[in-house]
Amino acid sequence: MRRFLMCTAMVAASLVGLAAAPASAAPAQAGTGTDNGRWEPWPSPSFDLPAGSRCDFPVHLAPVVDQVERRVLETDADGKATKVAFRGALVMRVTNTTTGARYDADAGGRSVVEYHADGSQTWRAHGPILLGFGANAGTLARDLYTVDGVYTVDISATGYRTLVIRHGSATPLCGLVS
Image (cartoon, rainbow, N blue to C red; front, top):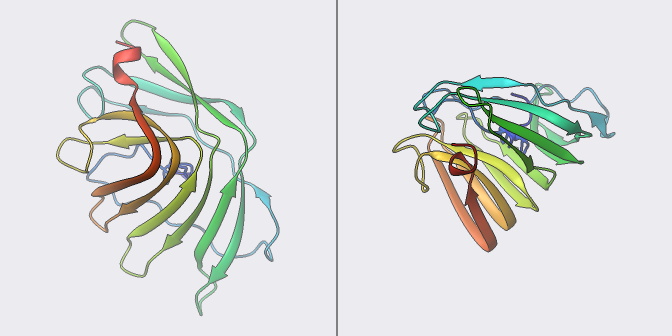
């Protein structure tokens, strides 16, 4: 998940990429800084989450609109990206694969993600992203969320997510597709 829904990215999620990986999984790291500081396309993958990981039922997430780009801002001595900016329109379709109910979530915010040597990440974001939380794996209850506003997300090396909203909101999505 190159964006961590972040996606996510953010980041789109991770973040999302950048973002809905199982709580036990380590967050994905950015690639090497081979783009010479230019914006480059950074497509968001489709993926499935099993029942109980985020929602009580299995969900499928797929990009409907994906114009995400990334720009490597800093690299370490080995050329590995340590600070990356993400931007671009992203709409992720969240589908309950049991009932077919679906919701199109705007996840097209902007973020700067810092990848730390210990595997942790810090996201500074503005605008909407899609962010998943596992049970007892973060500061929000287990669910998928559209987070919008101005906020930071710290992801520990173990995957624990700490969301601090400076201005904005976090809207749970599982109930919208149940």
